[in-house]
Image (tube, rainbow, N blue to C red; front, side):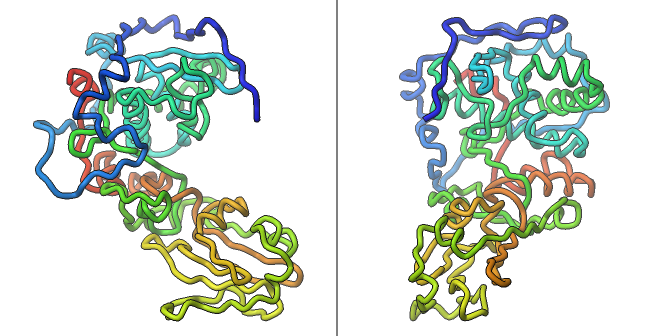
Length: 383
């Protein structure tokens, strides 16, 4: 296991030109656990019932403004909570205001040349993700107890403030950085909620035309993470379909199968009338798709007589997604994947495609996250 070292003192990186936001004193995790608001926040994908009355008194919806408020005006608003980030390369901890953290996530997670409304949608998703962790006192997956989150895709990718200053502000990308900060500023303090609670705002790169139901990837049904059509990325996503090849022996090894699988019958369960062969060569490794998800990804597949989930095949073979086709060519198996990522939540390329067609950040988020509302961080912190 990789060893991590951490500092006895936290490293704090702040731009000299920006006034420091006041520090918010957080309640101890035990106090938060006593609050009804957070009862469902302790599991990353806690199931929230669909029925029942709800909704916050007022919905704060992200709106585009003609010109962003100047930094001085923004600083006069309610104080921001602070976020502590474990920087995996240096082992340091960076402490910074929430909105600066969101800017760093936006720089890492979405290309700056995406449409502004797509960037704003991503900013709201990123802010929602970290606020959910802060309110729950969740430090899971962080190598050191002092940090709230890491800078890796285990949580959210993040570009440190020092790197933004060196490589963006002073490195010829100041216009791109200004665009990212505008997206953050125009959605300042806005998060997505479901029945008053911050949602699990999962997102991924691109789909093959549909997103995935949460239970088809994580085995937990979440009412706002439903499969929806996502056709907007199909014409604009680079490398939407990618083909990789494996030797038969490499494939067997990765899947944990032995040579007997080459001669196994790809017999189907008696109840299955919709199974689809994905290899028509009898001498090839027998493979039959047994079922598909609502998101058109492989749900179950029989390979050499062993049944795998699409997620298992994706992870064992290192595929870009679990939406794939499979065929034999000579001594190799060719697997073509469609889209990139787990498929649950917002498609980033889909969001960009929606924005290109005039979609707003609000419309994008309400499409990919079913039944969500919008709330202000400051409102939740008062509870």
